[in-house]
Length: 111
Length: 118
Image (cartoon, rainbow over all chains, first blue to last red; front, side, top):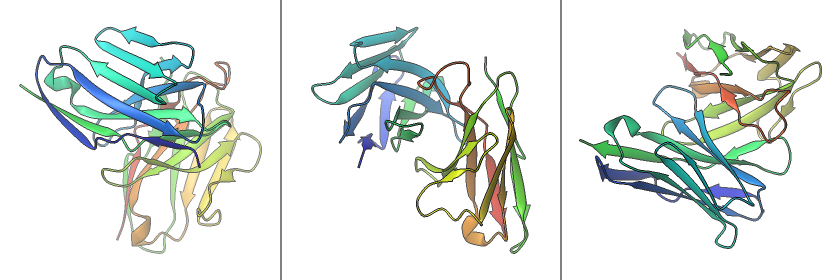
């Protein structure tokens, strides 16, 4: 079955460093991948979408890459801040209308 | 930006009663809305796809008679948890896709409903 996996359950980094989160997909070839941010007790908020024919996408301090050979997307936050602490979810559609999500990576940025 | 309003944000009910959760798209129309359930420190589990004007499509293992979904208009979907039991306690989140934005457009989420069944 189609899967999206985020192997790191949690990631701790120091303020100012770059956080890198990984998303791997198996058993299908998504046309695009999305990244969302979720704060505790809140719904996810959309951050970025990258299509399979795009190698890289940027938005302010965020950068997403899409490697169809490795079947992987990397999500980077540069110059990280404590306010970036949250859970980040990777998602894609399963070929139909449904969006499937990875388990998420909880990022903790220490001041 | 597109806003999805979900109410209530928290509800406590007694075992055996029913609870209705509303999900509204405030500034866009949504032919399709999605209902998710989330367990602590776990990802979103899709329960059902709500289709305006027709029956909802439920995921495998989700009881349609237990979780009643109604999508009566292009801006409103409701989830009713019937005869709630303590094991139904969870965080329920709805999402919607702007019908005019295409199938690949991102989902817009409500802020979730924390249901506690005592």
